[in-house]
Image (cartoon, rainbow, N blue to C red):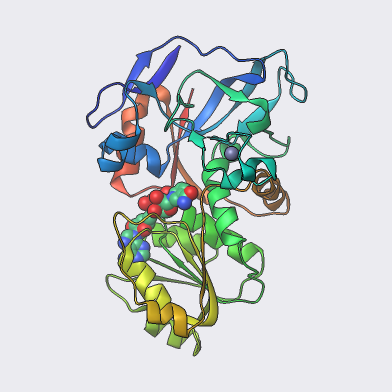
Length: 340
Ligand code: NAD
Ligand code: ZN
């Protein structure tokens, strides 16, 4: 089958021909319809130090997908041929304390498809039945193909009660842009989004941000004063991984404020702990999505009217994958989809 593979330990990604995977007893065989390019795929493409330590080569990469079940293993109970599915790319061990307690998102033995084991950028992929999610009929293939990052946004954004709260989102990447829409949808008051990229900030505004701040040119404090905010943000969603963004978030939180951290800092990150201690801040780390509460909420948010369509800015045929990666690399895009 056709697949996008990390063939060589160097920058780039290659369209190649590999053997189609075979489903195990409890697996679904899924014919891929659409896949989306994640920031993680860009790290892998660039072959940064994290990728060099993590990604085996050669390996089919990718983990954001929607497709159709075309075969099922003999142990599969709840899916049938023809079902339209996306799925959780974090394969958990099933026997650690957290897995056994139903907290699979805390499994310390998680393997990521397209990261540690073969992924979704192929004409077919296999996935354990328990990781698959049936897509309701009223949700489009395009939306379903971005459920993985949408799930990161939902898990982070709904970590704390946002109704009537003032929310700061640092980083208007695809996930930060979706978070702005979610925060607006669930009734936050001010939703302020920072970035250094005007193109992306404009998308955050479209998704319902009250104000966007290009911190390379404007001050967050001026925007807060303008909004009449005197005490700081109630909730912070760190979605950039940039130390200076997190530091400015800490400075501008209300006493007793709550922060959910999704962005991955490149290295050790020093902060002023006095901001955390004397403001009595709560900081929660976020990894992945909750299995499967987040997936349920994603479908329900869309069904209750959340419109994420502005986040998808480009679609290419898989043969034009290089254009897709170049578009992502340019920073002048939201989600980029590849059609299989
Ligand atoms: P992205 O890299 O597209 O977005 C990050 C954004 O931060 C960019 O738009 C960038 O311009 C912006 N930025 C740069 N400097 C800034 C500054 N000083 N202030 C504010 N913003 C600034 O990433 P994404 O795909 O939207 O993901 C967001 C973050 O979440 C990334 O760090 C990603 O690695 C991380 N992530 C974490 C998990 C997890 O499970 N914890 C899952 C997915 C992604
Ligand atoms: Zn486990």
